[in-house]
Amino acid sequence: MKNKCVGCGSIFQFENPDLPGYITKEVYEQREVPLCMRCFRTRHYNDDKQIATFDFDYRKIFTKENVKKSLYVLVVDLFDLDHSLIFQEEQYLHNVPLLIIANKYDLLSHIISKDKLYSYLQKYFSKLNYSYIDILIYSIYHKEDSLTLQEILLRQDLPKQIYFIGATNVGKSSILNQLFKLNNKDFYEITTSNYMQTTLDEIRLSFYEKTIIDTPGVVRGNSFVNYLDKKTFDKITPKKPIKPRVYQLNPGQTLFIDDFVQLNFIKGNKTSFILYIENNLNIHRTKLEYAQAKYASLKKNVLKLPTILEQKLLGKKMKYLVKNNLDQKQDVVFAGLGFVTLHGEIEVEVICYENIDVYTREAMI
Image (tube, rainbow, N blue to C red):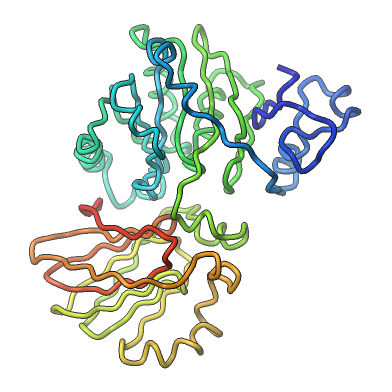
């Protein structure tokens, strides 16, 4: 496999440092298991340089021949569940052997049990007509989850070729690193980072008598992660268990989530707004009648993210009216950022950028 980087799957090349797989000839010849320059710098200097990438053709892994002999492991991000579902290829997932891994449970484990979450996910994926063999709620920090995954993958009644698929940054490569560490201390880790598209091509790994294939993440459209630079992206990405932030609001009050989202409580009785977002994001509460007048000052002193350049990429702000019924409990989701849970018979105006998906769903928690 020396013609490919073991970290990202790119084919080695010696000419252009701005393209995937770049390595110097000297390093290539000296090292038994070489890494491309990008993977080397990501691992040792946390410098996940963005380079020109090429679209990975997922159609080739869903050919009739492949489907007959493959198990597909779909990895989704529990904190960004709806936007973890991948692209047009959802059509391929209805009639294939499918295992679903609901990753990053460590962010929510203190506020929802596995049993309750499993029931929620069963209903969620049933509505999508996914025919799956099981749903595994997973955290890379829980060794027992990796042991359970290993047990499932090694079942003799399941195919010997296993594709790991999913959107960018759902944690496919991190899961595989944990899986292989169980039995092989010398396993050479796949490169991971918090930024998009770390894996650039297929990476084939021998796993007992089976073969596991890690694939590049599919870039999700209309998500904050597509428009933010690395510094801002790191600030909105949760790394520790989420602390729900509860605000008791009266009609006529407003919540700003930095300058990413504005929630205007238009109509209803006093109720709680529960925010599930990165713990260090700024939240500012004010009266709706003052929100516009104070905005310039707030933007300068409090609501500093996203940056002016990022705002231009995100597009103009759009307004959405969300109605919640008396006995209803629903989440309003902001793709790539988090969600807010609403209770009671209320109306809320949501203001967000035009290039970001904003939608409602049955409350997860």
